[in-house]
Image (cartoon, rainbow, N blue to C red; front, side, top):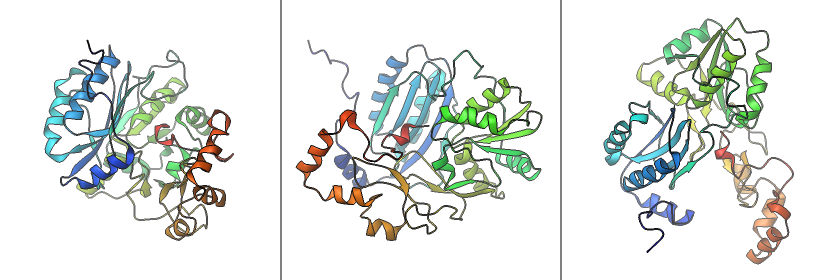
Length: 348
């Protein structure tokens, strides 16, 4: 008997070039959507296989994380399958009426494939699970309420990594310089020391990091903790549909192939190589480096999409020499000594 019987189509079987070619050949439109929910899932592994098979059949792409504590997903769904996708979610008790944040600026090229993974947590926070109640969260504010609180002078905190806030953030927000969420919680706590009685506003990309941070701050004695409902993604939709003032400056970093979507028209960051105004994130063309950095078109041409002269030299080596260099590195050490982000999009 085939040991894989009943387990067909549970993983992607194609390489990135083939997947990109297929995506470019599509003649229909897609919607990029993100959603999460803290909810007890008894058997995430079994649910993982069920979701993969169902959503694979709908030709949905994306990155989905499951854990006993819930689901965290960013996906690309064909418009022709959108109703079926939403119906499938609502037929599952754990995901019924789950808030969906649909991207405002979307070219349909956000993901190349479908990945569904089981993890210990849907959002790694580095905290003891018993140290605080993750369900005791702050008040959710609409875009209009958020604007009113900002205009009244409340303290605003960006609950994202520094490479995200570098290209876009809310006016006068406190900007932690952490690279991961687990590093950020203690940094935010230190930044807000002495403000336990003040009104605190938290925001992130889609809301999930604020959910945990608000519970963390309440556990540490903060009395008036608020979070932007739906994150920056839904804020962009609300201000557009309701004709509200926009207090977000620059671009919203997103964890998919786009790497960003415009919310405010300002360019507030600079090319990491020449210093000219620029907010375009790229990964180094040397795949063995893959550093995520900001690069303008001029530098992209001059540096051939690379982050350094060392990487330019490396990509011009014959393939066999590149392979030999890789084999000579113990434990697959990163190409440079500075920060590497080959797995950056998983660092939420």
